[in-house]
Image 1 (tube, rainbow, N blue to C red):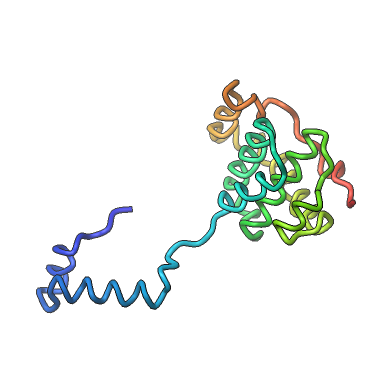
Image 2: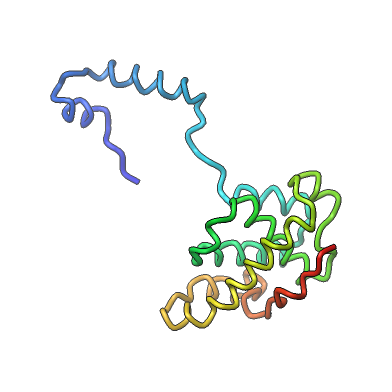
Amino acid sequence: IYYPGVRSLVAICDNTYGRDDILDCEESILKALEYQITVPTAQHFLVRYLKAAHADEEMIHRACYLLEGSLLNYDLLKYYPSERAAAAVMIARKCSGRNLWSPTLLKFTDYRGEDVVPFARALLEARASDTASLKLAGLKAVDQKYGSERRCNVSTVPLPAPGDLLDE
């Protein structure tokens, strides 16, 4: 993202406002917003949830793989970023042979395991239906990225079927 400098903004305003006027206005806007000018992304939530899940390296890579892959499916955007992150953690835990959810995750996410299951199933269903169409379209970057040894080859391991996520 490229933003104009103060000099350009002065020129855009045809010198109606000076440098100090623009900086004062910017400061008052930032104070009114309490400097909250970004929104949390699914990645922000994922980092927090993975810490709460005591994730190992493979689980981290698998959750990241699932979350990045979810960005390629428009239908999954109806879920909140926190929901997509929770779903990625649940599936990664399933693949690692762990319980789907834990009391620690409940505490740090405010989601119960049974609340996350529908998001996780939707993510798995989307991933299963997208796999062939994405490869046909030449969109293989996420699979290639996570198919390397550096990322524990997580994209080469089959994901569980949506029905394998039983309500706990």
